[in-house]
Length: 227
Length: 227
DNA sequence: CGTGATCTTGAGGGAATTCAATGTCGGTGG
DNA sequence: CCACCGACATTGAATTCCCTCAAGATCACG
Image 1 (tube, rainbow over the protein chains, first blue to last red):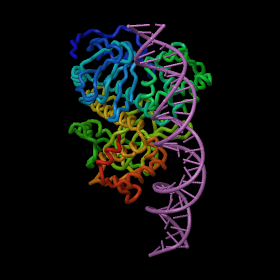
Image 2 (cartoon, each protein chain N blue to C red):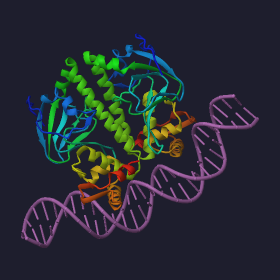
Image 3 (spheres, protein in one colour):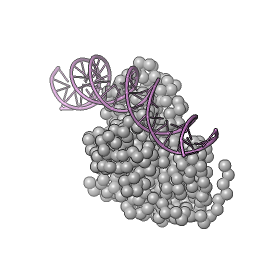
């Protein structure tokens, strides 16, 4: 895949960026975004593959992305879900440490890594923004690792609350990913995820109008289930 | 705890630093180390606590450190073991995201975070080194998360190989940490860790002259067990 | 309306945990 | 020096939670 970069294409879209300490990641990364070009990716299309040379840094403009690793025996571990406003591709050294795919049709901002890195060497501001973004990733992965030592109920509750925090509209959470994706993110099987969701619904913590739509009926109960 | 910082105390010790692409983390971080002061910590003494304001960045000069989180119900998740040459305390935003304790009597280099951060704003080189260190942490945590979806056998084998890679002397691995520490790192119980080690010994993959000393008898078998 | 993909539900089995007892090591004092 | 003590580690038996395998239900799409 070959991309011609155009400058000056910073995102005009309002994004639901994760916020920390009142400062959105968006606002803090103005100086690298204009280096990017938007590229559309269809559902399930690979954005990059594990071990490929890390040519770009990425930001989700719209849609959703999963990053994952596949073990030798075929098991897949989803490392993270990236939603509108999220950056990804930062795990790379020279090559990408895992693979990335669009979960739904998505618009992705691609920034040449070499350009950003060169810029970082002369411009401390850019280096600092990269540090902030990487630190954010680090915190998120820590959260994920913490999740993986919990019970199935706790993992699912935790996942729902995480998704709710990131993109809920009035207690309505739209899940862009399949049960298999969720299972691979939580280190569970799809059956266990399904059963646990049903159980949470039975207990009145959530409602499932459709399998991809969760209504939070009792956050209190979810928080208690989170462990 | 109050520390008077002295400058010019860079580590003269030869450290077993993790290497990536032939460049040791040590070599890449010369510009922040001289900002630190060495402080001794006795076994099991807390270095910092979760939610405390993040005053320092740290580097292990000698000894070993565990960083961990304790869940509401008392479960403890060890996020990482830090050995000679390792930096830690980078997960902090304004406050530390978890706690840190010395596993054995240790000598730790403390660098004022504010000093380093201020320096990073004017000195791109410092910002870049912080980025490199943070990226290293990120990769390590990813590895840890990947470990947590595996079976008990795979986790233990993986852990042994990781430790071997970091500090083995001719197939001899000295474990500074207890079985409970290992269990909390792997998301298992001490009984399961113990049983799994016994099983690996029975299969001839390792020998356990004492509980804290592991001899790698058959790396091949371990690598196969890693999954 | 059929067809395949996705999701849910059920029954049985297995891996890891829990609870409990025994064993081992290192340190301390007699 | 060695016997004792407490901490740490190992081993065993029973239980629990999650996985596997299998079938049925629901949804999206042609």
